[in-house]
Image (tube, rainbow over all chains, first blue to last red; front, side, top):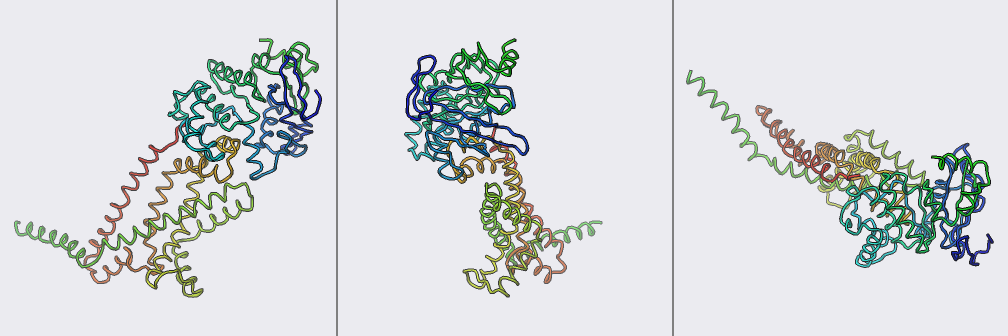
Length: 262
Length: 240
């Protein structure tokens, strides 16, 4: 891929990709002596769906979390839409608003209703009026199929419903990029599908997404690109066909034989 | 036999009539009202101070964390009577610190200040125990949506922490109400323990009645607080 920031590009399935929205350059991170991210570089273009695969402890979740600075980095740079990620304070808050995040454990605000979960940030951070925020929240909840639960509390919903609310809550901030950190790993098997369907819909609508997951079906069919990590390093960055049919590294072959062999 | 029984009844009735007599001669209800007022103001003061200390202790600034921890440790280990006497003799008499009040109400606000300073660390410790019930993910979700530190604290973390800390906060309030009797040490004369001393001095034959009067008074005040905190901590508990 070319590295120009503004140029458009066409990916392997003919999708028009826009400017580079997320850019990691030579990112290094240590936990004490443990070198968890080793020279990680990654570019994600507007409209692109990047799925990060790899064994546990490979640094894919950590990489995902550095992008909105839930994890700090020790070396390297991260740019969001061309702007360097600030260290602290208001500038960081501004940038975080542009990056939506969906967590493994949903993390809905337990003391607030579903509707308030979705409206709180637009009202308090974007200073939207209550009426406007609620109108939009109900549309979003309808889109992810949980509008009927708007006045319930998170604990009253199933895991799959909670995760779809979490997606709606992140979308309410109109992010440029959505990060998904193992969004289906905590779900009962029969609820995985409903969350993946919502994510696939989002991908088809052109959302830029970075998804850490173990769902190989999603990776194969929805991703524009697979980023394979192991031991804190990016080993492959390929189209799904290329990655699944001709993995270039021994580590990726081993990974695939372990998960696809069953 | 009937005479003995009659005599017993007579002494019983005189025992109880002493209560009525004491209640008419001394403003016992007024003294309790004084302690309630001290408690309410100090509850407010210590809640505000306790929240400020807690915010310092959970802030991302490590020097603020240390200062917050230090203040909590200092005042938590300080006996209340010493705080009160220091405020009265040290601040008022030696350093001439005058609170914006008349001479009489000065002692009143001095006592409230002392009670607030003494109680704030316990409020902060209660809140910290409540914060421990809030999963880390709540703060991460708040940050990822663009909330700043104060917005995260006041919209997400503290509302859940307070609801998880109702029981220890209730216990702190009960301790505060009882501690308000130490206000005598800061020169508040119209409160219950001072009045009890005065009453005993002039009615040495009625010590048990005087004691019961105040003991029962406090029990009546405190039982509802205990019941309310148990009820509220169940009702307000955050379901996860």
